[in-house]
Length: 97
Image (cartoon, rainbow, N blue to C red; front, side, top):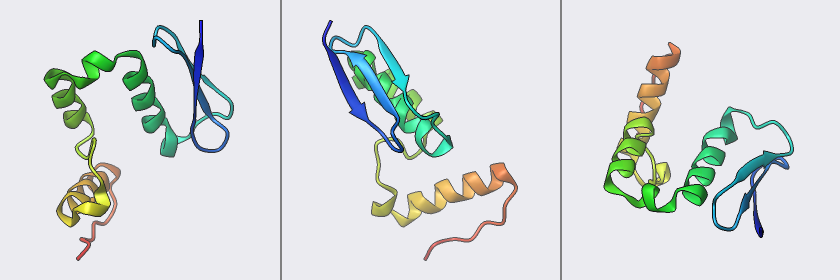
């Protein structure tokens, strides 16, 4: 079995079989800032056909409204995500102009 290593942040690595049949997270324990990105990397590697399907794309966007988009490209999307996060965390929300 051949492996592919994808380096993440702070020494955390996703190691997976080339065919996507097995994946493991090695190294430092990921925090909230990297765990979602790591999980998306694993899903793309292990389930490429399903991740490309309309059904999974819709579900990913339901769970992560900014999925597959750059927040830096859209003030409206950035404000939408920040407002949702602020509401969930009970924080004061300020728009970005």
